[in-house]
Length: 312
Ligand SMILES: O=C(O)/C=C/c1cccc(O)c1O
Ligand SMILES: [Fe+2]
Image 1: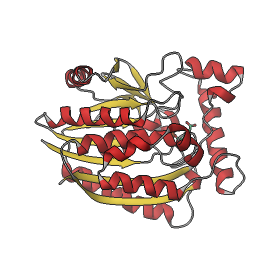
Image 2: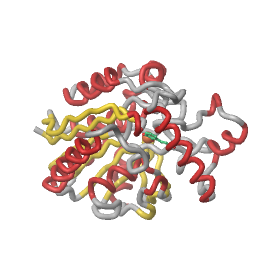
Image 3: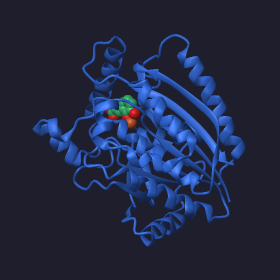
Image 4: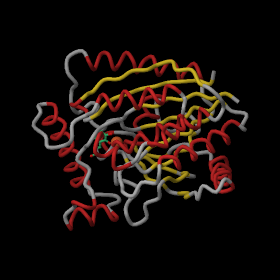
């Protein structure tokens, strides 16, 4: 049993809007180091915790989390479209392990996943079909949110299962940190938006392009200080990352959803993916941090953080 972890923000705006001078170069150098970390670890199995932004999971049936037994990228914002290489037997065993631990697991045999779950495996592994991967959807945008403790327990149980395998398992946590992108919300949505939030799967190319352009325009305006979305909160981000780095995962239980929204924006709940990944790694004992990188990048509407770790 050998375990490693990469937790990182994602952003669909990578390649669509340009960060301030020097930031992209710094980011790319960091990404090279993280790719080298992953290549050296050489995972035989990836468990990838990622959210979705109403491209695959909708309010017609919104689970707090779901183990995907088969999954495909929808290809939004030029991320990979097509199937993940999901080891179905292992994914089912994992789901059964969670059920036995009374974690009320949802499964999907045909998950559609967007940039939130696709971008990071694609960037780190060169594609979403290169290494057997069990995608675990974690709801990061749609109220209600289960208590963070529940996500910590989910991560621990998944770590316990992964640790029982004769595999080199890489946990990926994709999401956050503070950010408030223009993803519609039920409470403030128009009737048309509610129809979309309810079951807007497989949009027309025109509808996808319009959504993409709205997010790009918001990123450009946000960087100029002209958008109405909530500010990034680097202080909140750094405190959260310190907790992740400490390995004291019970500390996550104190994070309350309404306080997170107020301090760090409506999409800060994506950090649930980090919580699950840290708890999964911690289930095997203390861990050692290798990369610890953070920049607030308004052009990407992201408090952008990256942590990598291995068991000590
Ligand atoms: O789905 C969208 O339109 C935007 C999503 C987004 C924007 C910025 C940062 C993120 O983490 C996102 O998911
Ligand atoms: Fe996101």
